[in-house]
Amino acid sequence: MAMDTAHRDHLLAALRGVLGAATLLLCLLAELLVFALRRHAAFYLAPVAAMLLLGRLQRRAAAAEIGLVDFACLKPPRRLRIPVAGLLEHFRLIGCFDGGSVEFMTKVIEASGMGNETYFPPSLHYIPPLATHAGGVQEAHTLFFPTLDDLFARTGVPPSAVGALVVNCSGFCPAPSLAAIIASRYRMRSDVRTFNLSGMGCAAGVVGVDVARGILLTHAIAYAVVVSAEIVTVGWYSGKDQGKLLLNCYFRTGCSAALVTSRRGVAARVPVKYRLASLTRTNQIANDRSYRSGYREEDGEGVTGFTLGQGVGRMGLPPYLAKKCVDGGECSGDTVRCRASVAPCGNSSG
Image 1 (cartoon, rainbow, N blue to C red):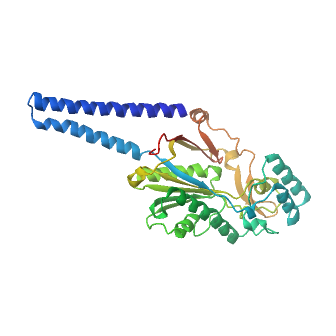
Image 2 (image 1 turned 90 degrees about the horizontal axis):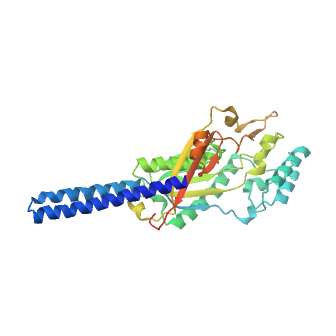
Image 3 (image 1 turned 30 degrees about the vertical axis):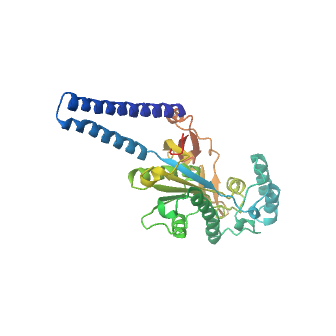
């Protein structure tokens, strides 16, 4: 994939070079016809038209590129850190888990290789945990606002310049939406296009980039922000189903925000770190194993939880997509699967 992208870029650069040389030859030919052969000055229109066409093609090619200006990741406060030993003790003290459930979660966490620098939201540090809607909204605030403050400070792009906002969070979909919470907090402009993705699993981050790409290419928008997070407060499970207990073991506090641009207008003068080289989306909804690889439902005792199926992370792409995307990065839902690859920009102008 990376080699194909490099070849395509080389061919496009060569084509632009040929067009530039042809334009120069047209200019020389026009000079020859007008001055040496004393032809009509209208011959100057040919090189002028060629230069205008070349400039338009170059502008359209630049506008079609999606670039990553910068990104920011959340660094939670140290008071929210949850070392492995502290987490296992937390499970024992809560009181809702029997000995078998605590033993199972202990084995899963110890086998996962998880370190001591992971974080829980404030609501889950209580005994018992405050897994409430209000706790979920509070967690959203603590995730989104510091991350976006960092992003806007890094890039120097104000929130008023953002034309599209894409927020993805699988397990928490409040009203007002998470996208509305962010747009209200930063007083974004009245014509900002907001999208709130939920229930799409780990693939939602790449799906969000695809949504932002479509908006940037079809509308006169310079910047889009893609925010990815998971609200673990409302995903806390206090039952005995081992498939649902996995969520308590694996999911932690985290958030990322990316500023992407189509290189139009003022954005063309903002340096970008990477450009989107390719993005491939497919889904396996017709496959029952994939469809149920992540499923929110009640257990036998009526306790709601999220089941992580055994197929998560191991479902294969169809052969034609696997071959095409062998060098790309992968994010899997598994109901929706996406692959995206990026190419570093060679200079500050992208």
